[in-house]
Length: 135
Image (cartoon, rainbow, N blue to C red; front, side):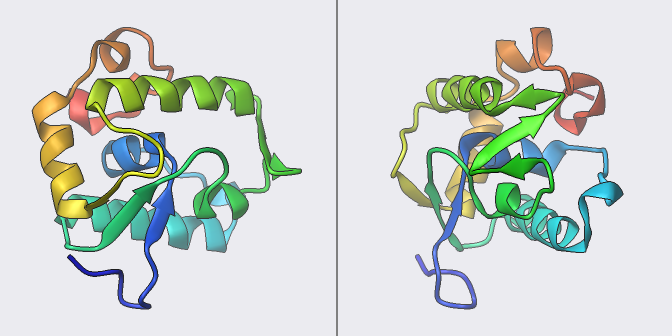
């Protein structure tokens, strides 16, 4: 298993690992840096590379690029930091993973394929109408 091309381990929150590859909506108003990082996450997870990913708690690089993230907290009207942490907890439990865990994108992809869609995704996720996993 290797780190990504820059030699770093990608560190992402659980719902970005699980949801970004299947998210069929764009947020051009969040800026070019956000779009580039979002694309990197989607491509890494979709292709299942051997890039090493660490599951982190709280704000990650995608959050930091988002104009709705202030003072290291999400302030989105679609779900603030408290709501996002609850989503992250659901993903952790559903995939059977924990914060600090490291796996290749390929292993995460296989795990998601095995466990998804979770009941939460089908019944409660506010973004389910924009999720290609549920098609």
